[in-house]
Image 1 (spheres, helix red, strand yellow):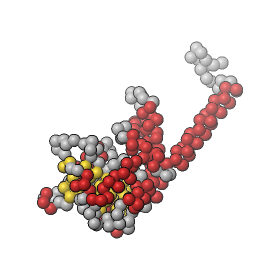
Image 2: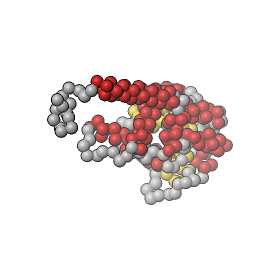
Image 3: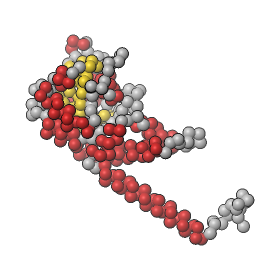
Length: 271
């Protein structure tokens, strides 16, 4: 149940792309959402009101829905307008770097928490209840626990309260491999759609969930996560070993002649 407009605190939303709009839609029952994004235009049914950067930054709660590569510049831009005691959160796909940037660039009189909703517009198209979110303390555990409680009770999300380091270690595998494999499969299109197996269809469902993610999301997951390179190296090393095993097996088979019972050129078992 949403609060009456007069009782809703203001929430500044910096960044109003696809994920920013998703954020506004699900937070508007509890907050009056004021969004800033130079590239955004107002649309019918918007859950947020577009405003200037200073006004959005002056809200008691500010969410940063900007690419990780632009976070430092955004933090410097909003710092002069932040209220004392304001809560600043980011929603980026990596947490170690953003946590460090928020600690360095934001004034000591604000509270900061890192969050990573483990879903996007595609996976959340039927609602967010039951989906997952990581909440990472940046300046103390108390405010992070309050954010976690709101996500759990108000938004009905499954919450993981973890350190930025633990988040990035797991995300390097969970997101890093998913996006890497999906990017390769997208480059191989068109792929079969007729005689498919259930396992192949599930792989393609994962591909569809990230198909329309911006290039900035892929760069953040693969470049900004300090643990992603190690996961990629291990994946490519194991893939190379699997390829070598197959090549060695093919070479051994060729040197020993055709297997017993194999088909000849006529389609009959070879004699």
